[in-house]
Length: 85
Image 1 (cartoon, helix red, strand yellow):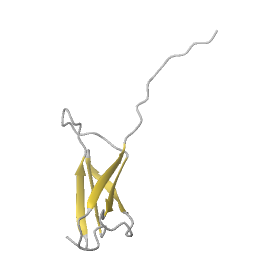
Image 2: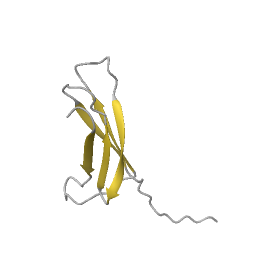
Image 3: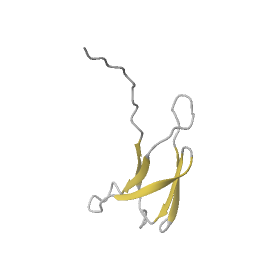
Image 4: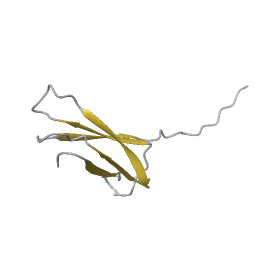
């Protein structure tokens, strides 16, 4: 719907469907048929584990929009032991 919209994203593992934690989630929307109109970004905020939401006017005109969800995860840290002689 054109105007202010509410967006909600649930992040889950593809195989297990278990909720996955992220550090940043954003929505990028474009109009593929109108290259002269640049992309719009909307940062989403965490509302509960695995859920991110935001409200905004990212979709500001009637058109066929394409949305891309950008997700940043915490890097996995391996613990290793080192020794020196």
